[in-house]
Image (cartoon, rainbow, N blue to C red):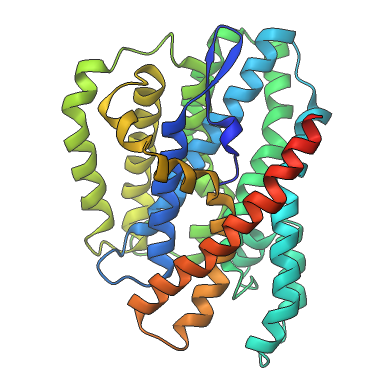
Length: 349
């Protein structure tokens, strides 16, 4: 949700090449998330779309840092953090400005708008929710906090590991750490002791980010060619995804079992489209409409939740879904063309 289209890339030698299908995959993720937040009754597991974002973010950030290290044998942390700040903060500030003006008018009986805005600005919504004091109408900001914490900590950890370990073996470290996190989550998310706070915890979501980094480290050269296997796997992958999002499994089951499956499916999809730009999945996800939705997905994610929360108080889920998508889409398009793209061009001058 957080990476721009300029980061939907694969490495060719030391050069980054744009992969449109990765933006299409991001479009699929934001569609699932928005349908879940709209309250669509026959998609109770669509919130797993956020875990597609996590794997994508791990892959894209890992790929950027890897490409820089390959070329310069170093990583410029200040440049990395500056780029993250310029990419993420302007649309976030736009959301906060709109929220500051409209939220007190729309929800006058809710007295924590200022607190919620500060939690969003400081990327602390996930921590606040863990302790039962998180934002109500900006609740979706929990995932932003997890990703930002990863962006803050991972480059430092990576530099440390590059100094003490073999470059070619680091993928194994990320794989083992992702497996440990998965086992840790499985241990905590027991069906008779599940707590809602677990859903928002950083340690419960770290596996997808780490898996994405591992794929970035290995792909495309060291991973097996998925050409023929991929063609036969597409129906299976789609079937498994439907089995995860359609039935009512319950959140404990999804967190313990569904989440690692979605993470693995996303990793396989990334490998496939990076290795085979002309494959069926690449063509499907590379459709111009999907690519465009993927490009504006950060804005869609930011704006859709408070809009849908307001509409839920007035209408049933079909109107919430349609109206929320339209209104959030308008804001995301305006943000993309009038704010995000101009700022990106200005920074590159």
